[in-house]
Image 1 (cartoon, rainbow, N blue to C red):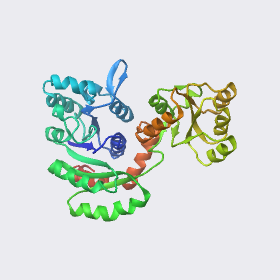
Image 2: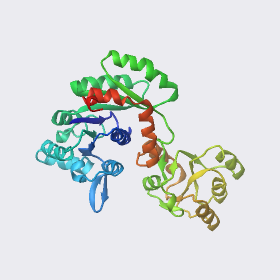
Image 3: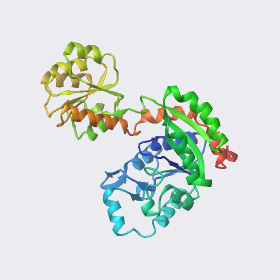
Image 4: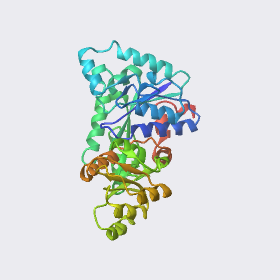
Amino acid sequence: MSAIIVVSSERFSGKSSLVVGLALELRDRGFKIGYMKPVGAYPIKVNNEKVDEDAYFVREALGLTDPLTEISPYFLTWDNMTRYMRKTPPNPQSRVKNAYNKLSEGKDLMILEGAQNFLHGRILNLSALELADVLQAKVLLLDTFNEELSVDRILSAKDFFGHWFLGVVLNWVPPRRMDFTKNLLGRYLTSQGINMFGSVPVDRVLRSITVNDLAEGLNGSIICAADKGDELIESMMVGAMGQEQALRLFRKQANKVVITGGDRSDIQLAALETPTKSLILTGGHRPSPLVLGHAEEIGVPIILVDYDTATTVEMVEAAIGHQKMHSPKKIERIRGFIREGFDLDLMLEEIGMHIFR
């Protein structure tokens, strides 16, 4: 039985989506795949139980029934970190190893999701390197493409993980750099003994956010068309101009959210006449019955927030930049990129599973 830990040098890099995409593609090839995220960071409550948000999403996406307490036995939030500084829990590595042994029963491959970065979890002796040692797992780096830093980060990861290092996948590669990653960078990494398994281009769908997630991130209330909360928002526009100009500009951008003051009925109606996924009304002002009724009729959720427009814009920009992959549309999208641009055969060969194909 083989094991891979998917790690990154920074958070919000797309590890969960890559894990799900790889697991589903390998399942289609007939492999039995297990999943674990030893150190979580984003606790949510499910059935009055605190669980890691990413671990919960991946378990649901893969249809697993393993207990979440075994899939993700530890959290590293601020409160937990300060608690562990006062008293470290007994034998975290043993607990993780025992959970791993249960989760891996009957599996051909375990795919583990790393924490926020290489070092996260060190306070519990559960950093990515320590987990690789304890679980005898190869390390796959998912690196968000950076023109100045990616090469150095990849080389440093090889040095850091040593013989456990499996190779790299690049994420969010701009179109103008795809040829570079597939040719010059790929050849260079090969010359350094590093496997380049593939690259995922910048994609509007993968960088989108659902209406529900955006509302939650803004502490806002959806006051109509709540059944459209799973719609994906790809871009943002601010309505702070006249109605005619707004209508002209709004028509140029599809799948957008429009942010405007709650008292600007003219802007709100202009947005509803164009391909808009949601309206965010600032200042805590409810829209007019005309706007509310029209939005409900055409299925455009309105999110009501108490912040001013400038603050709301900053929060939406941050939310769209740190979006989650918890969406069937995004899962299918990442699977498509894996089929087209990820060398699964090479990965299977490197971890000794090609003999099962």
